[in-house]
Length: 516
Image (cartoon, rainbow, N blue to C red; front, side):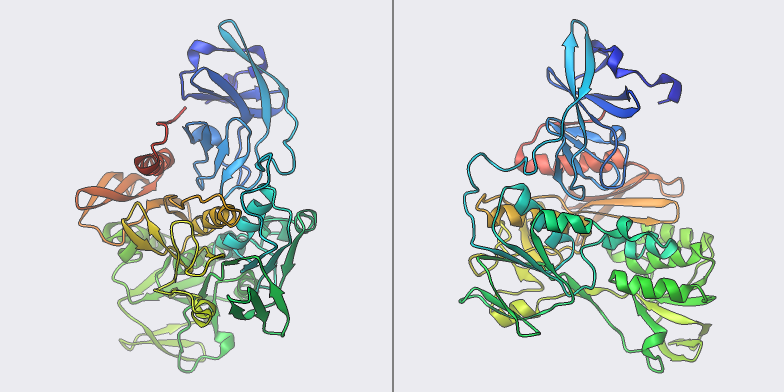
């Protein structure tokens, strides 16, 4: 939409020009506002996502929800509330009035109450206290949702990290290129935890869980009783021993602290070897190249992302990185580091100021195993994210849940999945008995290319390409047994949202999605 063609919504907009399910972006004073129609009702809301300011006018309407094209956050058109992560904060609303054939956007409406999602009555269940083990995506999303639903009991978050919950995806992306100010990385500012009475205990690890006594013990000996427990311990990086390498020669990128140290080291680096052609590895490679560092990627893979996205998409990303100067050594491993020289298993020698390893993670399930919870390549949970012990829930990278879209239990290491599971687990802690049936979603940003992935394709027997990878405009459909189980898109954000909505509708019988 050209800047000279943006309607002033206070002057009215023709009803006939806004179809059911449609939306238009306009102005109300200095504010960018979306006017949306669903059936015979009209809504006016802010035009930018509260997560990373994505243009909601380029998103999708599903029933009375408006979905962001960037990271699939969902907002209620009626209340403005963020109903689904990764956004937590509401978008503003305006009063709308239809007068004859035109609809007018009037004054801005006041913000909703502090706990707008709380029922008039108390939640069905109100445990004496809630303890959350883990200070990442799932943990914060759960704590936030407990308060949003009106829970007023004690909430304690135990975190082994040295920082309150932060935007972990940016650890391997923007932060290494920045750096970014703390307030940009923090998911919530310190005052939030005080106002919401969430006790965040940092630099602390749980040593044991007694599910019979409903008690956890920290490594420093302190104990915490709980009425309900959420395990959100995430995953630990896989560490590889590199003969000849000192600790100062090898970097892993999992935490904000890791990124701070690596950022400082990059300042004097000229050549770096990245071990692992994973999403983390190649996001780090892109960040290093943005700072002028020579990058060699060594990986056992034949192509990057081949197991997740297939060889054709893998070749595209390899070519993308090569166009930015990255040099690949695939089908190989690093066998030794001598000073500033890395040796590969084919006798190749690479100059390296240091190594960055991105070879995967493992779910952190030791606590659960020791507590006697059922574990099978993750903590086994039911459709409500409850473990084998009543009152003990799990969410995020550690949870293996019965996914209705896959017809078998799965475990997914995606940021948005962790946040959404944390939200559902919180509601179920409060007794709402809500099935977790959300479609898995993740994204990766490398250089100028953003790829969105919806669904879960552990395996596939056919790949359908619509559009052009080289043109950075395509949808790749992964099919198994005649059914599309996942879609990866580049430059087609609405297609990604539409597939997500279609998968949800197939089991929830949701309204048809529309794009304004």
